[in-house]
Length: 460
Image 1 (cartoon, rainbow, N blue to C red):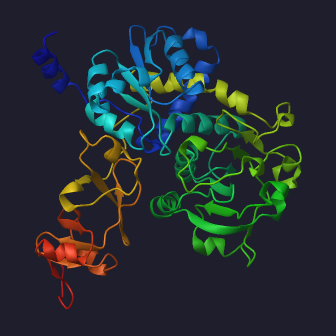
Image 2: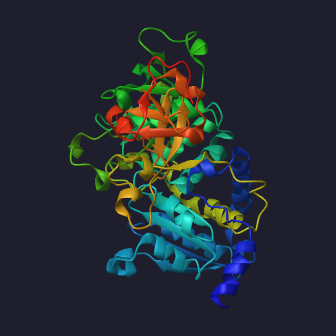
Image 3: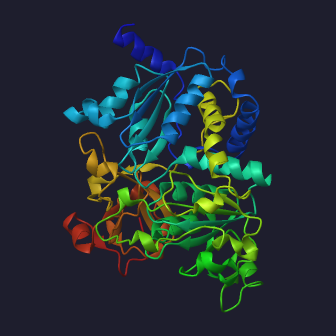
């Protein structure tokens, strides 16, 4: 088909659904995917007509075993085909081809793209340039939504529900993209999270802030004595959707007592993402074995791990009926079958319009810079126009539209009044979002022709 004719045809087609973040799915859509995956799991060989003739392209800029193989297995089980570039260091990327160009080219070869990339926000950028569904198979330390769906599915199968469960996160919570996606999803399902980090590898502040501001999750100091040896070296944080007045009913000065746990989610040290300042003696890393799981509160807890593991889960746990990490890995096939079938339009799991995202505004025009050096806005400068989203109006907070990290600013103006305010000014609530102008500091605002709003009665 000539390029012009193809462009006309594509312009008439509905925009594809992407799975870049776990936020791209509603709770009802996730539950529909779980039901579909459960049906597929009864006999994964019985669905070879679902996606016959469709092709998935797997583009992996980072090494992968489970994610890539489970996606390829899922597509083949559905009767489709796979084209793969499992080592992008040997692709045109090694010649300097941009991610945006690669995505535009591969969109003409396949019906869906499964992307793993080392830069945070890479999948969001890919979705901007693709006219077929993009599935995020992990972008740096940002998100890994299909692993999250697999984890949620495992909890749903094992416990029969997700809402109200108490889930322990243990190990490297700072760099684990799986943890970050899982935290957001559990918050949406109104489950509780108990953070037991390796010291120095706590859940990032921007993740905790987002959980609080967007999902109503309250961070509470926890009294972890009942967790036994598992929490003997960690400062434990309890993240719960309970409201502050409800928390006051069952907390004391020592912190909230963790009496029962439904699942322990262990993570390895993500050494491939460590920053220079991150130091770790792996011989001192958190261990999970029969001794640590002997605490009364953990008696019925299932043990989960996204794999691969190193030494953080002892081999003596492999035969323990509470350990489900190998089941978890196996469930990656039916859940990814359901994801692929849904995004290809072969199921009715994705009903209605996609979850609405807040508008993204041009950041470069205002001199804003994402502070995350590994953000795609830094590593793919040729095709990225830096963007930000408003994460909160009071306090006013802007985040990178690609990697979700907070963008610093020192003054905020109104484009109609040409007045600027300090970031904590309550007058900022009166300004329309599309009239907000962000500045590095007051001097930057004044150099741009704005005046201080001090002693002025109203904002523009």
